Image 1 (cartoon, helix red, strand yellow):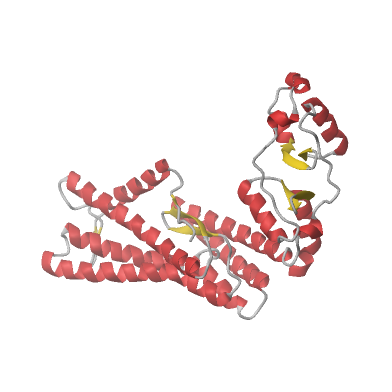
Image 2: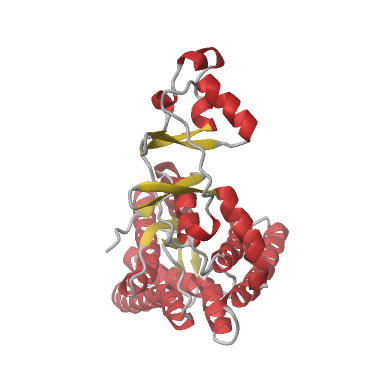
Length: 363
């Protein structure tokens, strides 16, 4: 089972968001018939801030549970979770694979809002009971009723059909029952961008910077998800051996960096496998070369600067897997090994070329 990692965009960011939420509740007092929003009327200030901070912490825990709802369904169906990133309006569970089964995606997308809805109902019912005994203005009544309301808002907001939010994923799954997956993604993405544009215009009109941020997040997320889906589907059925470079030029660990620079300039290659006999020792790239001052390159050997930690791939592995590996590790090439020997090199350029040639399959 994959480990669940809660990534909070840096300690400073999460502290700032929690304090901002606490400040908002500490300085707000709005009473309606059945709820008091905020702790602004509670004295002394220390008590007001204590309850506001407590509410902010519990609210963030609720956002985490929302994302864990998605993750639970994913893990239950064998899909690993790389990380969970939390924002003030929700979060993103980064999955190793996006399911192509629309029925499974429906379950996964709905799980988060369902958790928020259940939490909202539980907090609201508890709040109404507490209010009947202690009164609407009691801090505990305010905490529970406000948490109920905020979880309902979180559920409703995430159900907006603004891809890649939960509602947008539900929409894509619904589309995918009747059309190809990439077309369903494109249609859901277009609708998500329309919602993002409307949110942006509303944010500008009301000077709501939070809404502007959400609009930017939705628009960029929809564009990136559409692009990633097209790439993934365009590489379907393509193996590494179909697109790798089999004519591999290698260098010796004893070659100087000055000689390597001349070789790169002549062949217009950005990296080479480093071979000693028939054994692969490492990979050397232009980035390794540039780390050494020009005056020291004539006396520095490739073996001194090459990368020894190698990430390998086999000729019968899928090209989409290679693309994912390169993106995750931020590398540009992978040695292709078969039977203990180097049989080719797969570069990012090879993958881009394959995507361009095969893209017409997804249109």
